[in-house]
Length: 602
Ligand code: SAT
Ligand code: MN
Image (cartoon, rainbow, N blue to C red):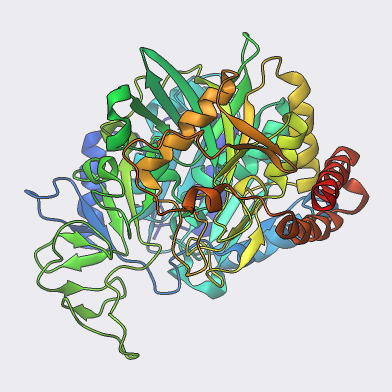
């Protein structure tokens, strides 16, 4: 069937030429330029429902909400099929999969040839960051997935206003996506930083298919950031207001380590008397630039939250629960027969009966073939919700200038070794600590859950170039920020000998943030250790918190023996980068080694 030819709502010649090229390659039945209107949204929803891709949920209980189920093999990012396609292999570096761009284009064309026959090709102009902000970047996603369009509508600013801003000769990131049956044998997530282009096939999962998110805002974004002297980071942004003054921090944790929970934190009972107010600016990605005042300023490039559902409830994250009551897309959770949704460790009583994420009949108490409780929701099931619906959304979340950052926090999920919190000695040491973050693997990516891996700055799967150059860029940024934020490391996940978490986490984390901010002001009690400044036993305000005897000591303990083996891990990781790794990083390594030696001797 000949494609229908709607009049293109743009005169941008680069865009028109690219659309023509992709139309010829993918051979869609129709082309649809997305304008971002409400009427269009309703049309798309209707179409999604008719094709069985979207199930409308109970309009009374969950107005404007939809359910979607993906292929069983398409439930997380597939890092082994994600490639950085620079002309030179060294530019992708040892931590990325690399493919020659010629091979990558050829391989994807093989899959894309005629891939949209019988489908509509949607053209989604989008802005990462507030439309027109000096921080923002424009992308255009071509996709054959209604699910992707409806998710992008929540996660980014899309449509007419972006095309208008793009104008006749504006530049943009080419983001091409095709479901290609969501078949793993067709799957590849290809980044061409030198061409400002992304091609993704064979998946409809968030991080693989919503190309504004990890692909543009982090992988391609980090490449631009290095060239343009800013930082594109896997960080939440949070404002902490007290006595009429709001200070902002960013925090980088690997996927599914609680960024969304921390970004929406509720002050714990014991600190209520201090009158804290928490403001959510972003839960996953931060773009940071040096401001005219010499401070570092951050913008959240996204417009929505793509959060992990299991474990989200009124105790762990009441603000998230409030955020997802309307206009939300739920993917791979349990679908109740009453058209509600539920997930393990979720909210309220489960429905009387329903269907699991992978299509099995489900009732409370059902077990699987191994006799274990039958999971209703996939561990990486997600909600997609507009950020503006969050009760604690910051009044500044769409400020085109962003918010000024007082502290940068790195963290991982570690049962042992890393104390609850420590402050680094200076910028270079902070970069070293960020670069050596390790974490136990979670369900957000395919692979063995629990395995420890180095995840520098929580960017291991998201850095769009050689990480040695990325560390060098971080080091150089230090000299560009006249009033740099202090850098900290936290670990909410330390366990005792019996395997029990030592720290209650969630809202109680404000006690740690409070210490961090006091250190930024030059207060806060701390002891100097080989790894950095660690709070003294009485430094955190524990009013109303009853930790078991000795827990605080264990949480803050820095054992030189543990760190000595940790150090071997740092060395092995750094050696991967060969001579490309900055000597300033090795200098930090040697200094830490010396401090540990002195501590052991003492
Ligand atoms: O990669 S996603 O954006 O789908 C989720 C995550 O890993 O943070
Ligand atoms: Mn993430």
